[in-house]
Every structure is written in C-alpha cells, then in structure tokens.
Image (cartoon, rainbow, N blue to C red; front, side, top):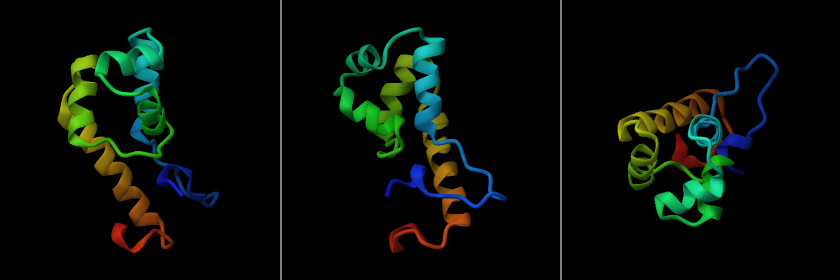
Length: 100
C-alpha cells in the first residue's frame, strides 16, 4: 500500500504528500493540465499521476524536472518528500521493514 493511503487514527494529523501539492501547483498556479505538465517535464502522464496519487516518491531526477517547470528548487521537493516519509515512520508501526 502506498504511504499516502495508510489509514490514520482520528487523533493523528495526516501529512500532506508532496504529490498533492504538486497537483495544486500545476493546475492552480501554472494553470495547465497534468497531461501538459508531464509533456513539458518529459515524462509519461501515468508516472506524474502516480506521483500525484502518492504511489511514487519524488526522486532527485523528478525534483529537478518539477523545479524547472515550477520555478521552485530541487531541494524544496526533496525535503518535502523526506519530511512526508519521516512523519509516516513516526506514526506507523506497520510499514515495511525498509522504512524503519
């Protein structure tokens, strides 16, 4: 199960997956479709959708493409991905062993 889809207790705060922020940035701030963003970044639409859905992590290569498209920095996206994972590790006891 992708990290973004783990169930949380009512008293837990669900962290924002960077893919959710990416989608908002693409559609609201850049005013383009996910398909157009994928084309501009040179990736398949299904890959970008998997990132948006939290099924794939933002890697350094992807962060570079996002930063070029959005005008943000590579470090911003990598830090957001790292922070997202850190919160999941903190609150989850049922993650696969390699996340601990």
